[in-house]
Length: 497
Ligand SMILES: *Cc1c(COP(=O)(O)O)cnc(C)c1O
Image (cartoon, rainbow, N blue to C red):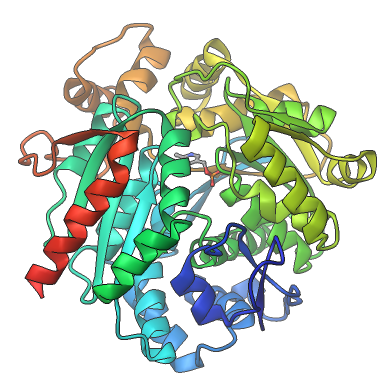
């Protein structure tokens, strides 16, 4: 299988190359040229490993079965995930099922892909005969950063620099990143929001002079954001696994339809759900749940994507995003691979911060996507009510999706809803505690303890002992200083080797 650019500005590449390049250097994202059909036979009783092996083999066609098997076993085991199935299902009520994706080392769904991706990257390098040093550049709204650091730290031949918005992530997210050890890591706070960081990273990728300087030192950039196909592909697996899990538990007959409801920021996780549907999984519709930064809700309702609006900091910081990168892949699919139209829209976005799709594209999208959003009071109410009713604690991101699924009346029409639960509540303890008790403890670490005692839930290992860990990264820069920071870090790579 070949991977092509959403802007038709690059030669088709192999899966290994798509993973190593991260994104198309000239702008644009790699997508599979065609979408493989899901062979559901036997998936009803399949382990997570088995489902992963099948799905990954169908997309990463230049990886051998032995290579994939090894990557999957290194990524998903008792040391990395605290549940044997890697992900887990929890039925909220008869019709709604939480798909817990936060059993990995950093307590966010990003672990599922980022525990695997370093292994895929290493194999891809060997496969393509790539002897350069890979420098992973990451922009994070909080969770990707730590998950990527954990995945890539101390991996030979690879280094990683993470940029996060200064003051724009939670205390726990910040400390998780800043306390990372590993010889090959750097974490930098940039004065701006996530979109500034992401745009900055994309600009570094697209900077031919910088790429030349790096090449001179034997360094090649890559990405661990969901702009990299290697991030997206492993996420397709868990929707398929969840579907057959519901069949197994008797909530669904094999072949019956489900809805997926995903708390969305960069549009990566929900896009993975769309790929599962496109492969043939019986998904009726995708509920795209946004927080107060509801640019996607507006877009799917009107066809106008307009970033010229106020940016809100919310209790779900990993969704505080106005430029949802993976929308580009989705639009490419919705227009049957019309790179000219897609390029036009994204040029417009770059020029004026907005674009508008044609009525036909809007209609195609509307048949698939149901958009909705929830503001802060609604999110807090969802957390409080869910806890009182069931004793289950939702994190602030998952709560957005739970609220939206309720408000859209997705419950009760007979089609089960799989809600992606994207983080452990312990990662956002003071907000979750405030939602449950009505009282806020501003100390995040006391909130964690209190939440554990109050609910009887074991504290997620990702946040245990975090207060005592030494801070190793405290660099703060302006957005304009990102390029310089990368040059400085790159110089140290040379010294290290
Ligand atoms: C990253 C993240 C999201 C958003 O996922 P996208 O793939 O960016 O849409 C939602 N919730 C949590 C907890 C996250 O870390």
